[in-house]
Length: 213
Image 1 (cartoon, rainbow, N blue to C red):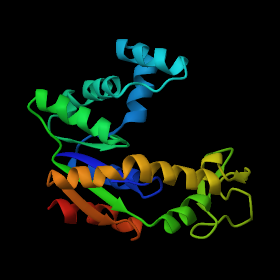
Image 2 (image 1 turned 60 degrees about the horizontal axis):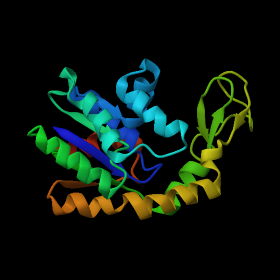
Image 3 (image 1 turned 120 degrees about the vertical axis):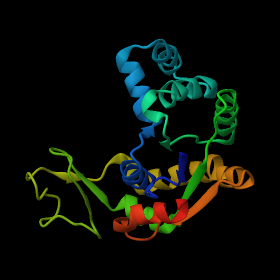
Image 4 (image 1 turned 90 degrees about the vertical axis):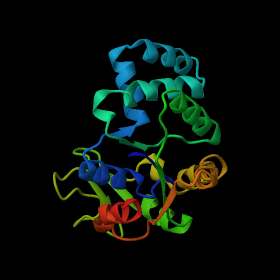
């Protein structure tokens, strides 16, 4: 199975992708991880991407897909994979679809993790992270025993800039404008599956198994 995880930031795509990948024994592929690996290793694709990044420009969709294909055509992906964080736009989805078709391949399922904006705002703005050990907390769902102090190491626990209220709202605006249209894109292709992302993360694997099997 070749699967794409869809959903707004904070919807729980990464968690569900990780547990499903482990269950089905297939790679969980993040485009961010692929970019970092290519940049670190100084591959030809990485160097090409770096030219755009150093110039403050977006890496073209065609090059992004080329980098992605360099990963999904590796031997460990023969039995399938789960894409997390790509595509983000209709244009990227179209390029990916066209390039996979050249390889006589295709995406089998796109799973949308649906969570209302107000729930996502509570999730993300309430997150706190230890500056020393990286432990994560939530002021509502998993608070520290002492306010602002990490239970694990005693380090300072802070809110990341990415989780500030206005940043979260801006990320959601970008999602609705650029990424949410992918739901209709994959629905038209008859491969869209839907998960209610408001349930407990303990049910994350069961949610994925239910829609796939």
